[in-house]
Each structure stands twice: as structure tokens, then as C-alpha cells.
Length: 167
Image: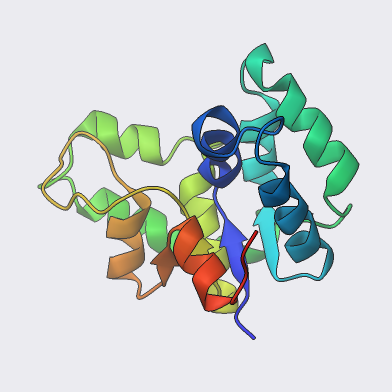
């Protein structure tokens, strides 16, 4: 069975606009089930992005605390070697990306490079709402780095289809 590692926007965008907690409860029940059986996980940096967001996300934090397993957000220290590879590649792309885009992508607390490193290390699929924009120079998107390192990435609906899940 495939394993999936979810980006912070899997939670934040779903909660804010697509599947609000108070309206589409079946989505959140499905997320709970998939997290409990280990089909989906995430990393400590994603947790930080969710929990450090504005107070608007308090409801999402409460839901995560109440519904996700204690080991859902995995420590990223174990993927340091792959993270270094991503840092090296990102720095080598100064001819394409702006210095600010590189600096932003490599910020210590940004989950994206760590998420990719974790997926690389475990051969898991990243679930994100980010779309590939290879010509974009002022922001490094998850799909561009995934494509460079042969890391599979899909969106939420594609994940549900692969799992034959509906809600």
C-alpha cells in the first residue's frame, strides 16, 4: 500500500476554503481514519506551520490535537542527508530562481524542503495543493523540486481516488 505524506496546505486550504470543519465533517472523519491507520502522516515542520499560523486557525489546531495520532507529525532529523541534497540543488539553481526565492525556500522552519527530503528517504508520495510552475522564478514550488529528485506528488483528490476512498 502506498504511504502519503501531507503538506500543511492539505490541512490549511481544506479548512479555510474547500472542506471547512463545520460543513464537510465527512472529509475530516476520513482524514482521521487515514491518519489512525498510518496511510497518511506528516512532519514536525508541517505541524509548526499549522500551529504557528494566525489565530484564525485555532479550530484547526484543536481538531489536529483531538484527532491525529501522537506520532502523526514525524521528526525530520532523520532525513538530514536528503535535506542537504535539496539545499545543494536549490543553491545551484541561482541562474533560474531569484535570491529571495532561494532564501525563502530554505528558511529553517519552512516545511517544503524537509517534506521532500522525508518523501525521498521513505519513497512516499507527497500530497499538496501546490501546482508545478517551472517558469516561475520568484518562488520555488514543491513540484519543481520533487520533479528534480523523482519524488511523486499528487493532490488530495488524486490521493482519495488512489485509495478508493469517498466521503
